[in-house]
Picture 1 (tube, rainbow, N blue to C red):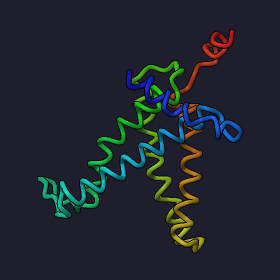
Picture 2: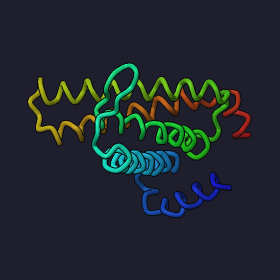
Picture 3: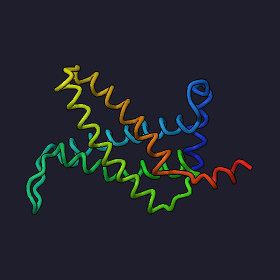
Picture 4: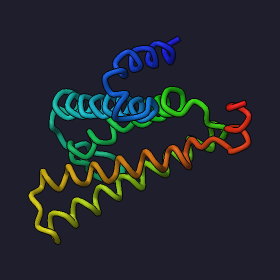
Length: 166
């Protein structure tokens, strides 16, 4: 099964990181990093080859190729990210799948907003160099995302935790 293969592959690389982070955090970093690379790759292919850097004309108006490429990448990276988080990173969640999916979508929207707010704040108000601002923003948003997914999106009910430990 694909899920088992992904878990085995990620866990194979975990031992050197054991001192610094729990396995779940490592899986989150590996899945999130892989999904981010996939998102960037799809963006690149969409922008340069599928859209050929051309404006997309729709019934509701024109969409610039760099914005349309974001949507195209999101169509793939969103379900991939959900799958990886649900079945690889947080497989013990006791919430129903549709609840997890809704919460995951909500979290993604919030993270997009946080990225925008923090990058604007750091660059325009704090006058931090944009690359450094992006790094700070990423650390904050990824930390928030991990904690929120663990405690909210893919939460394990306390009764279930107690039953699993016995």
